[in-house]
Image (cartoon, rainbow, N blue to C red; front, top):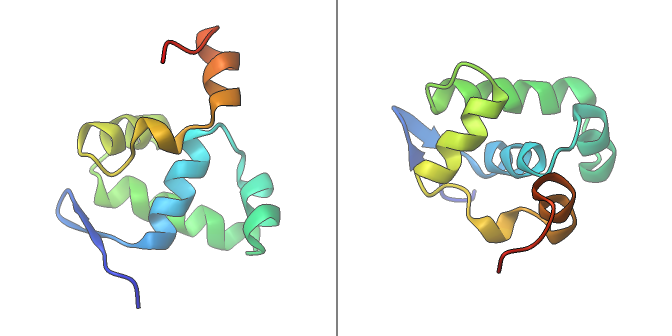
Length: 91
């Protein structure tokens, strides 16, 4: 079993990090589900668990806290998504 990443009160497990990265890249649950080969309800479960572990109020807040706590890194967000949302890549 993969090692958990400490964040908030409980360890964030690798699958929870996977869905957090997907959310940071703007993926909807159904897209993440297809890409990872998991049922949609499983993706939703891991998203809700990540929100709980990070003591966030919603997924956007969880992504922000993921960056703040070092669970997510800038490299986790695709260049395509950064260009689309921010309007350019600043390095």
